[in-house]
Image (tube, rainbow over all chains, first blue to last red; front, side, top):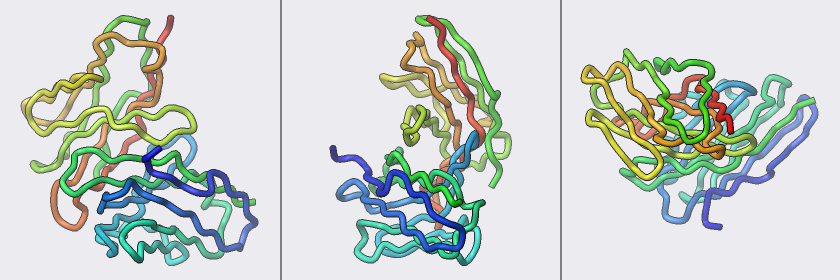
Length: 113
Length: 113
């Protein structure tokens, strides 16, 4: 379909390893968001891109987390030196400029052992 | 960012109306009220949004209090497929955080046949 695509859907890694999570937004959507959702909680904002630039990265928990969107389309969330507390579902969403709704992907479930 | 407040859970019978309340007493004058719902292992799905006036769409109605400190999502005839976690969120309407959603804990809606 033409929805937001996230890969991998599941990722199991060991503590201390490096992880990349990919988001392919809906074609033409200039706004892209990353959220993190822990079990039983609502999604928590991480970062917002407008085009290629990060307009708001206030939700990134620390400098181990970084995200890029080099061509204004696909985005990659990068987590260095993973910790068990990073285990969560990482959600990506996109929207056209000025639109009301965000379109979410199904998420990437990260488990850090 | 102040989060919204919702009851942890609610129950309904099939084909009966459901009123899901939300408190957002610290909402700013330009923030929109958005509702999303989430099924297990899926990303949130947009339901409806509004600013000051009541809104209707094919999925639901949104009733917003005159002082904007609370709102109610109305499902006119609940079906089993409406069983989900419902999130009432604030959406920034300006500045660098334009479009950012702030989620609360959500309400788990159970629909009985």
